[in-house]
Amino acid sequence: MHYQPLPFDRDLIDRIIEDHPTPFVLYHEDGIRARARELTDAFAWNEGFQQYFAVKATPNPHIVAMMAEEGGGADCSSVAELITCERLGITGQDVMFTSNNTTMEEFEIANKLGAIINLDTPHHIDQIAQLSPLPEMVSFRFNPGPERQGNVIIGDPKEAKFGSTREQLMDGYRRCAELGISRFGLHAMVVSNELNIEALLQTAEMLFELAAEIHRETGISVECINLGGGIGVPYQPGQEPVDLPAFGDGVRKLYESILVPAGIAPVRILMENGRAMTGPFGYLITKVINQKSSYKDYVGVDACMSNLMRPGMYGAYHHITVMGKEDQPADRTVDIVGSLCENNDKFAIDRKMPATEVGDIAVIHDAGAHGHSMGFQYNGRLRSAEIVFNDAGEFRAIRRAETFDDYFCTVDFDSVKVDRKQSATVG
Ligand SMILES: *Cc1c(COP(=O)(O)O)cnc(C)c1O
Image (cartoon, rainbow, N blue to C red; front, side, top):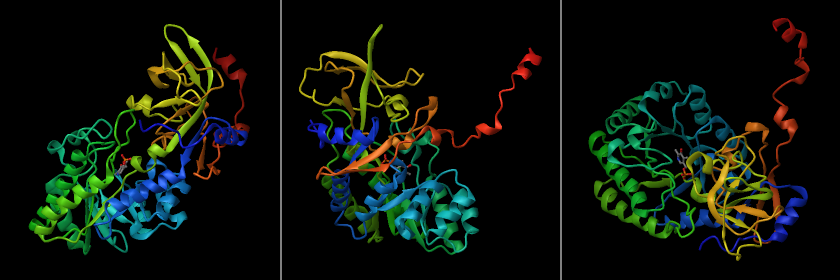
C-alpha cells in the first residue's frame, strides 16, 4: 500500500502545531523535488524536454520556485499566475500561457514576460496581431472532439470548452505565419488524473500524427509538442502510480515511429503537469473536534470543504488515516465532515475507520494539488497555512493562515450604519 508509512511523525506535527494550529497543509519538499527529477529523467532521451508546472495546482510561490530550481518552467492561465512567475524571475520561454476565454490585457502581460502563447482558438489571432512585439512562439490547443473520450475531471472533449478543431488549427498556423510568427508549438490536454499509460500515450500519438499532418498541409514544423498535464495520482489504496520511466519510453517509441519518419524531428517534448507533481506530497492535517451519531455516525474535523473541495465537488476519494491508529482495525463506518452549512462538506462517506477520539490528528492524503488552491471563504471559514517539511525534520511556513482581519479587509465597517429607524418606517 503506497500510503504507509507517512514521511513524518507525530513529533513533527506537535512541533508545527505550537505555532500553526490545525488545519494546515503539509508539503514534503524532498518528495516534490524527487518527483520533478523522476519526470525529467524519464524524458532524458529528448533534448530540450521541459515540464511546465501547472501553477493553478499549487500556486504557492515557494512551490513554484522549487519546480524552477529542478529545471522546470511554469504553466499559467491567469494574470495572478503570471505575476507569480514574474516576481520569482521565471520569464521568457520558461513560461507557458495556456488560457481560455482570454482578454487582451492577459495576452499583453504574458507577452511582456516573453511567454510561449498557447492559443485556445484561432479566434484570438486578431488580438495576437496587435501585440508588439509579436510573440516569439505561438502554440495551439487541439481538442479532438468525438475522437477521444476524456474523463470525469476534464469532461467529454466534444462538450469541453477548451481547444480547437483540426481545421481551425491548420488555418490558425497559416494565419500566424502570415503575420510573421515563425516559431510554433502544438498542445492538447484531453485527460486529467489519468493512471493508465495507454491513455496518456494516446495523447502523444494523436499529437505526433497531427504534427505530421500540419507539416504536410502547411509546411510548418512545430518545434515543441506539449502533451499537457494529466498524469494521475493513485488516490485510492491499491491503485498504482504511473510508471514514469515506462511512460517516457512509450513516448520515445512513438516519437521514433511517427515524428522521425515525418521529417520534423528534432521536436522538444513538453508537459504541464500539476497534480502528479505535488498532489501525493501534500497532506491536509486536521484535528477531530466532535463526534456524533444520528441516522449515521459522524466524525467532525476542524478542516472543511473550503480547505479541500475535491470530495465535495467531484465525489473524489481521499485516503484518510488517524495518526497513531494506523494499525488499529478499521471497524467503524463513518462520514468524516467539516463545519460548513452544506451537506456535501464531507471528506469521506461511509468510510471504514478505526475508532477515533476528539483530539486525534486525521491526515487527509494526496491534498498537495487542487487543494489549498481551490480554497474559499464561504461561511467565513479562513484559508489555512501551508507548511513545508523535509527529510531532516525541518519545517517552515510558506503561507500563514488567514486572520479575521484578512477576511474583513475588503469591506469598510466605518461606512456602515445599522439604521433601525428605516425598517421602522418601512414596517
Ligand atoms: C489544469 C491544467 C493542467 C494540469 O492538470 P493536472 O491534471 O493537474 O496535471 C495542465 N494544463 C492545463 C491547460 C490545465 O488547465
